[in-house]
Length: 255
Image: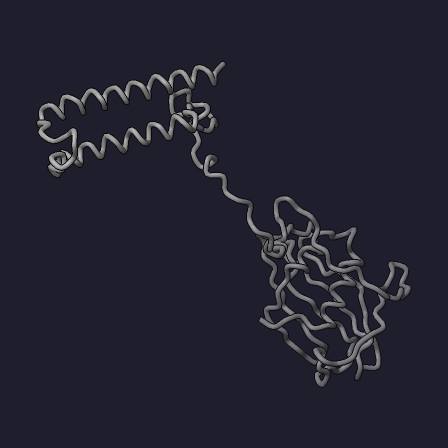
């Protein structure tokens, strides 16, 4: 679709400013308007316009021709009039009136123009110096799309992994709130001690599994049954002892 020319934009702005009390919705329709086609004749031109009905509010006047805006066009002796055509409450066209002047040789898209003015009900000419910019009328039912802002350039905040795991009801799970022994921690020296004992038990198993006990003084001649009788109580004892110490540590931490 072709774009609006500078002349068309200036005239539409001026018409919207002139008829703001009669048809305030015209502002939003012009902002959303698109050119369908443009037809030029001896009497000027007519630009057919399309407006999305889902994005703009209708004009209460229904069917009308709005505006008394005129402009001086290079190549024509007298000013040219412009009117916005409204059908079914929608802007459908912008048409011209050359008052009998032959405009067939005028290229309205490139011809210099100026001297915009409107006609008052008393028939007086009032210069249009600075037409109001087309600002869409706020309408909660038919919002005009706005361009999205720039994407943020700052680094995103770090992700808290605990926030990714939530219980029903909005409470987050953490070991400190669980109430189990996993929240208790043995003192560092006891941790080192139990690690050494664990390694000793594992080493004891490996020695007898590989038959190396015959080479170690004190273990030579020790049978598997005897070793098993020593190993099982030792493992059970270590487990019970660690459990008791954890209970005591947690009870002390809970006060």
